[in-house]
Image (cartoon, rainbow, N blue to C red):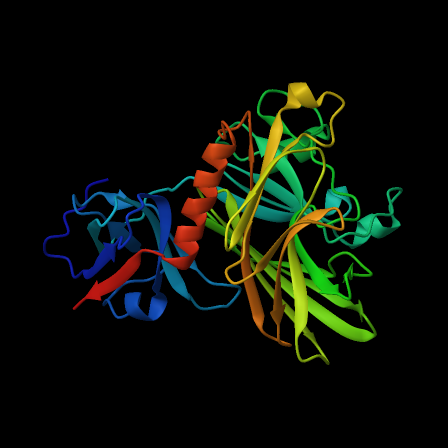
Amino acid sequence: MLLAASCTPALKVEVANNTQLDRDDETVEIAWSEVSALKGVTPENVVVLDNDKHQVPSQVLYRGEAEPQALIFQTDADALETKHFQIVAGTREDYPAEAFGRAVPERYDDYAWENNKVAYRLYGPALETSPEKLVTPGIDVWVKCTDKLVIDEWYAKGDYHHNYGDGMDCYKVGVTLGSGASVPFVDGKFWFMDHNYATARTLDNGPIRTTVELTYAPFDVNGTQVSFVKTISLDANQRFNRMDNVYEGDFEELPIAAGFVRHDVRQMMSGDDWMGMCEAASDSKDPARDGDIYLGVILPGGEMLADTLGHAVAVKSVKSGQTLTYYAGSGWSQGGVEGMGEWIEEISEAEAAATQPLRVTIVK
């Protein structure tokens, strides 16, 4: 939709890529306090326009609060490119959801979330007393080769371990970190939670970002009771989740290990703040048919341990109540990741977005 905004009050926004890397579909965030300074704008009528006055899909973030907290939209930006946008009051187009998550009480209290590239789930209270009796912090990967959202359809079908043409669950979790969870790592041991998540609260839910806050009951870490709150955000067009983890207890510092379990590893690579791995489909009777799964973790300032207790983890110590932020993601050889070289490029792009994000300036 083309909006005639020449005489409409507008907030001018400059978005600059100050790096030599091209950026694709990177999320831009503007505090709602900046947006609300524009007379007449509301969450229901806020519109983002590009330099050609075309509407750009956007989302108002609430972060679980009653009042708006921020406005986000996505943009490409070539190396060293600066782009210009306007925020105005207008008629919002109907943006199709490209990120979504929900609790799944019909399947033992799973919590599942996805975007147009990847899908994940983790496990809730009902699973503890189910026939599986599984207690794990691990995150499951559902591989996809479609842009459509599949969670509801796959759960309704109840046969997501079979690939009907758009992907499947061919990843084994068990009592591990799965694909990107974290646990305390003390005295050479992983200290797993005694229970699956206690509560799951969806804070935002598309069309661009889905966010969930999960709480865990206090559990023992080497003689100390520790509580844990995990917030996971996934944006459209990205393969990596942002993980904000807060551990609290009577400790000065607690080493945390974040990463993924090792199955049939094909390749492993690491850098100063990241690790990437390729492995065969692990929950499959025919791994050759079902392809390879790519996993990655990004933890600025973390120590990379490629093979510890059957896992590849990044380790960093936190104080009680301090937020540990890292990024965990996945890809599939049949779903857009052609090889390890391409996966390392995906990790590099995600790391750049995390550590050197596009610079946003409100032009006064």
